Length: 161
Image (cartoon, rainbow, N blue to C red):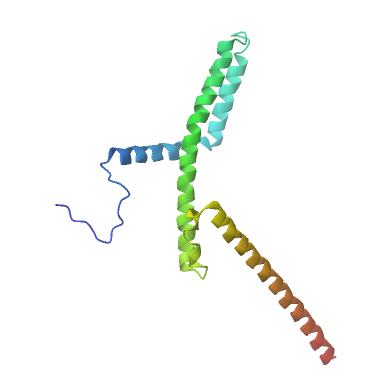
């Protein structure tokens, strides 16, 4: 029988589970592909492929097959990239959310904001509106304090003259 550390974080899924392994593999492929897709070299290769395709147009007499090659290729790449990029964005978004939640938790900010990403759009809009109104009120308050400070300085200057 294996002994486990009671303080250790529980794994999200069993590593021996085929679904977990598939998700892990997909995550790794998505991460590496997203990294590669964002590089200048990848763009240059893609542009080179399009250029070669365009140059071969006269050779193939701009046939339907010649056009089908680029259309099919770009459609397949686009279709697959949607899923890979979405996966990467989901992971990045989740990681950022965890970091923000931790910053909120350890700061003087309102802990009630932790987890608001799980609310409905209407609930989030309501919170956003309240925060914007609060920020506007603070701005007005700051401006009022600044004006009062200027008036007090002028009054003090008049008294000392």
